[in-house]
Image (tube, chains in turn green, orange):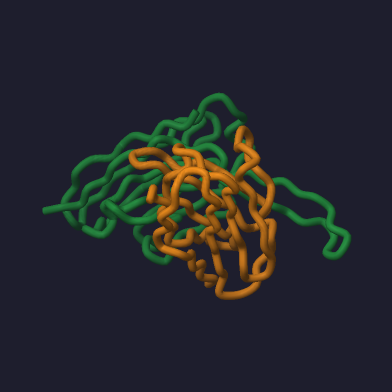
Length: 128
Length: 108
């Protein structure tokens, strides 16, 4: 349902644009995320974009170098990566963010969030 | 920024045993903002739990989540061979979605 593409080998300082094609759900209604995983390391959240593209967020490690965007007509998510560094080498996953809520007697209405649909990832290697 | 610390880093157990994985936040967080994922080698993460204690679709009831404030726990009541993997907790913040560093659950 989510298929990433655009990964590859790039030299330090170079650029790359990742894409994520969505199918099987109403893409335009969901916040979408990019999450990466360096070789042998844990998961690192990279960026998110709200359904209407108004709210954009970035990890400190990529802010100012990466730009997230989406096209709700083409059901696609993008990550433009500039000024790439060796430490950006990773598998990049796109993930759908879902939200729900319930009423709590003590605190009122509470929202909950989770990433429930993930792509298989695309590999980015930054090396000279 | 809230930091999530998972412990232990590696947990060595045998099938049939009970696993208890911890996720501690550097400050109090809303239970609704805490989720757990399972990741096997070469695969994408899979959602296990959300809202601290709600199981995701098709997740067996041997998995349970609990906690509040700064301390959260994922428990696997009776380990099956397919449960040996890496587990991550995640916090959904207002401007970032932090992951813990992961706990590797390995066969003893």
